[in-house]
Image 1 (tube, rainbow, N blue to C red):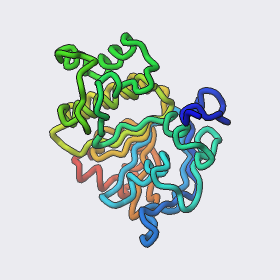
Image 2: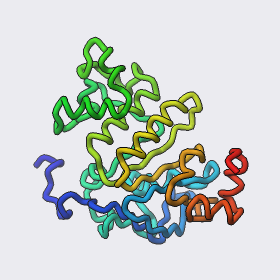
Image 3: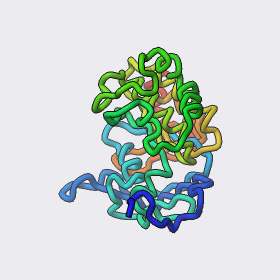
Length: 258
C-alpha cells in the first residue's frame, strides 16, 4: 500500500484549532547524554504566536525536534488539539504541521516539485504563494520559471531564497501550526523581515512558534517561552517578562530593546 494513504484515525482537517499542550516533556539527543530539555509543561492556545528564546544550548531546538518527532520524547507527551502525537504515523504528523528551518534543503528536481511535491495545487496557486513570499519576480526572471532545476541541496539558490521557497511551500499548505527557526545569519535580515511580515498577515489565525535568535522579531508575540539549561525559566507576554526583570529582561537589555 502507498504509505501516504494509510487509513487515518485523525479527525478530518486536524489540527483545526492548533492548540499545543506540552506536558512534562523531556528529550535527550543520545542515550548516554543528559536530557537536553526536561520537565517542560506549557499550554499554547490555537492562534497564539509564541517565541522560544534562550542562550545557546538552552534547548530551543529540542522542542521542535520533539514536535516533529525527529527525536522521540523520553518523558512526557505533546498533544495537538487533544491528540497525543506519539500515537500518529510520522507522515500523518509531519504533513499537518509546517516548519521553515534555519538551513532548508531542497530536493533535486524542479522548483515546482519543491513547492508542491504531491502535485496538489494549480500553477495559479503556486504563483500566488510565490508572490506572497516575495519570490515572484525572481522566479519570473528564471529562463525555465517553475521548471527551474534545483540542484541537490539547492545550492544554486541563496540561503535566503531557499527559506523563501519554504515560506511559499508553507503558504500553499497553510497548516494550522507553523514553526519558524529564525536564521542567525545577519546578512539575511531583509529576508527575515519579509518572512516575519508575511507570517503576520497570512498566518494570523494559525499557531506560530518561532525559535527566536533576534528578540525584536517576537516583541509583539502573545507569549515568550524562555528556556534556561533545558528547563522552562519564564513563560509570559513580552511586556510582563520585561517588568519581571528576569532572564528575558536581561536578554532584551543586551539587545538594546529596553
